[in-house]
Amino acid sequence: MTGSLVIAGLGPGADAMETPEVRGALDRATDIVGYIPYVARVAPRPGLVLHPSDNRVELDRARHALQMACDGRHVVIVSSGDPGVFAMASAVFEAVEAGPPHWRDLDIAVLPGITAMLAAAARAGAPLGHDFCAINLSDNLKPWALIEKRLRLAAEADFAMAFYNPRSRARPEGFARVLAVLNEACGDARPVIFARAVSTPEESLRVIALPDARPDMADMRTVVLVGNSATRIIARDGAPFVYTPRAVPE
Ligand SMILES: C[S@@+](CC[C@H](N)C(=O)[O-])C[C@H]1O[C@@H](n2cnc3c(N)ncnc32)[C@H](O)[C@@H]1O
Image (tube, rainbow, N blue to C red; front, top):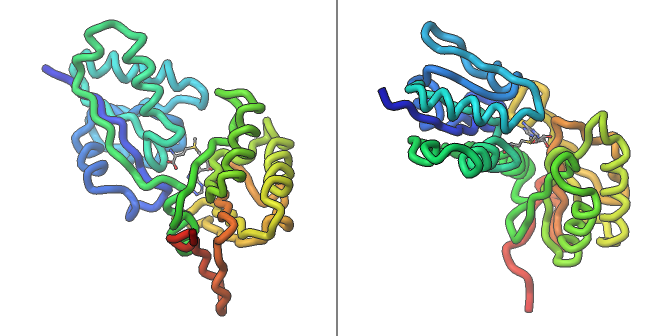
């Protein structure tokens, strides 16, 4: 029997934001592999084996999934959001490149999902409507100096920005530093959106001017969007619309 490996994005939380393609792969799977809270989003059924694992074991998880696919299983690795955005798809290809040659011949597919920044941007309006970049603020896999350099250069280039992993218990001071760098580099009151647990029952959205943003407005369930210098707020009753115009004048 020939096995397969699918690396699937479950979207930001709501079932309605999971693609039919991903749902089909989950229905056909024999094994689900992933970080504990993501595997918990997959409904158990007879014949389906769940393999939840802890954070920070991505390469072990990838190798385990590849080995099961070699053994003829139909394995789905689940990530939240999109699997190619700060998630499992890269870990799988790192394992394939360093692994035994026959892993390269496996049937491997990456199925996209709605990533947190796009779900959050849609809730707010169109803050990423012009050029933007996404930065993972965790320094688990890269030096802090590089994060700070990318922040400064992105601000200088006037990108709107999306920040993943803004804050954790292990790095309480990191996001304060990010806000200080942004205030220094941007020097204006552009809108910042703190979007927490988007598309789940705990969803909250807060729009605030950059100088008023505080570190404790973010946690690990928050994606933070920062506008560029042209980003606009349309005030109205209730939550404002935030959008970035499509054009930059000559
Ligand atoms: C390890 S990254 C995974 C990103 C995921 N692959 C994606 O495409 O959204 C985890 C970070 O994604 C963001 N995130 C994931 N789901 C979210 C949601 N529903 N609402 C807000 N932010 C979310 C948070 O910044 C969180 O710290």
